[in-house]
Amino acid sequence: MSSQFLPVFVQILVAIGFAAVSLTLSVLLGKSARRNATKDSAYECGMLPIGDGAPRFSVKFYLVAMLFVIFDIEVVFMYPWAVQFRDLVAGGNAVPLVSMAGFAGVLAFAYVYALKKGALSWKN
Image (cartoon, rainbow, N blue to C red; front, side, top):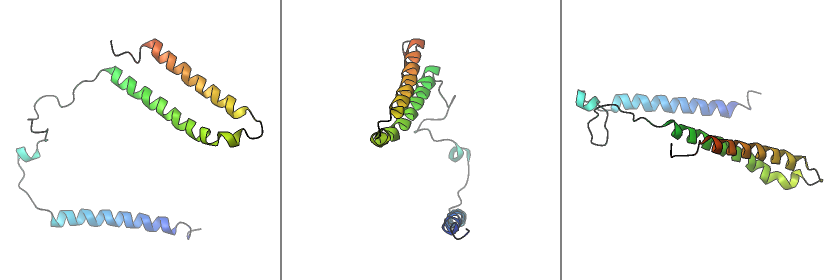
């Protein structure tokens, strides 16, 4: 059984070895620069880093982003079903179609619910 995992172990060892050699060479061959406050400060496209670094975003932005992720993941679940649909219903079996219709119905209900709650309205 260990012979089956030998390529995996070799790849892990090569990855760890490469990381260790790269970091060691970087430390040994890299230039040692004098540190000061100007060099250690964050570079903000030529602007001085004054004030709060992170602007405040509306909660609507995060809500729309989460809705996008949720509906995008649902499409990922639908794609393999659509590819195999012909093979799934070959014997006259309607269960795959009914189950996906139920799945799409839940998605449609969630979308209508989000619209009614105003989750996708940018006016507020």
